[in-house]
Amino acid sequence: MVVGAGPAGSSAAKHAAEGGASVLLVDRKKEFGVPVRCGEGVGSHWLKELGISISDRSVCARIKGAKLVSPDLKSSVTISTPETMGYVLDRKVFDRELAIDAARAGAETALKTEVVGVTKNNGKVTGAILEYDGKKTEVKSKILIAADGGESLVARMAGINTLATLYDSDFGVEYEMANVECEGLIEIYFGKSWAPRGYAWVFPKGEDVANVGVGIGGMEKPNAIHYLNKFLELDRFKKAQPVALKAGIIPVGAPCRQLVADGLMVVGTSAHQVDPIHGGGICLAIDAGNIAGKVAAKCVGEGKSDAKALSEYEKTWRSAREKKLLRRLLLRKVLEELNDDDYNAAIGCLNDADVGKLLDGNYAPVAGKVLTARPQLLRALKALLTSSETGRTL
Ligand SMILES: Cc1cc2nc3c(=O)[nH]c(=O)nc-3n(C[C@H](O)[C@H](O)[C@H](O)COP(=O)(O)OP(=O)(O)OC[C@H]3O[C@@H](n4cnc5c(N)ncnc54)[C@H](O)[C@@H]3O)c2cc1C
Image (cartoon, rainbow, N blue to C red; front, side, top):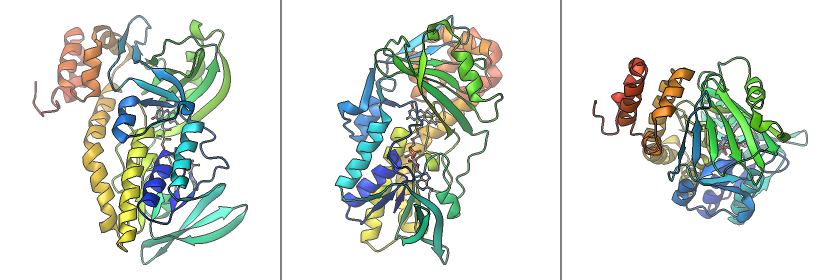
């Protein structure tokens, strides 16, 4: 049984069904994919790596790079690396198509069905209590896959702590807006004045339509909508009109310490499989769902569902992804020490190759360059100087 028909859950359901398991995919939504709570940006390198071909219908805009803007708006750097090229999706369509793929692979789907409890026997998860139309039913599962997103409760009901601290959460809020001039680039605005411990963004969704949003650290005050309204005071948004409001919580700390238990797997944003720098989690969720679904099918086929057997998912996922995410977390923690003047100086001295190195986790040469422009950042950047990919100290 898979709880949550987002990218993680639908991918897990598809692969489990393809592997021969009998799969039930449940979501409390009455329409998979709706409402959307996402900036909808994905890198094309990810889709290539995961072997996902997306339909034209799910693509709103093709993105040719990213523009990083300094807090004083005086400097910017535009980068076109494989990691910054991609798409802004229509997630209503994208998520629905992932669920359709799961159904085509043989998964049964249940809408408007909320998991309100988990059943256990001798500590092992044996099923869930589903609520549909006010009626509760117990359904047995050999393996329960919790793919219930950032506000995840299912794994917690089963005894795995997936609660993100406020410090390791971001609050994101955005309007989809008409009458926004865009250049086919994802725009990221840094600085405490725009978005403390986060960034403000403009993600183009078509000719003159864009997701305009702000993500701030969970401890920051006032709230994210305050910063979004402030961002919208910029002249370029004078004619902009909202057509949708989207908001949500994003865990941006380390991935959860435990991803499996007897009869249970946790995948996607519910497992904090999210990039700590930009809060992107769509493709990480698909990747984790793919691995979990395949392992679940194999285990069901072998008649196993204990944590030891399911840990093949955890080991495979951690060895493929965790190191990079933890390096991104280090960068996030360093960046949150910077003030607006630091950002102005840093963005003023970086070029696209430098940002490419940062995204690749090769921090030391970039930190060295920023320090030449702003030596007072030595204390803040020290962690980056001593953590190049090879582990060498500058
Ligand atoms: C404002 C904002 C902007 C973002 N922008 C981006 C971006 O541009 N690019 C990017 O890659 N990521 C972005 N993200 C993150 C991205 O949306 C998530 O990482 C991604 O959706 C995770 O997929 P998932 O399948 O793990 O969870 P989700 O997509 O959250 O799916 C979880 C599903 O579980 C269902 N569910 C929850 N509880 C229950 C229950 N008890 N019973 C039944 N069903 C349940 C929910 O209805 C939901 O459908 C953004 C997030 C926010 C909040």
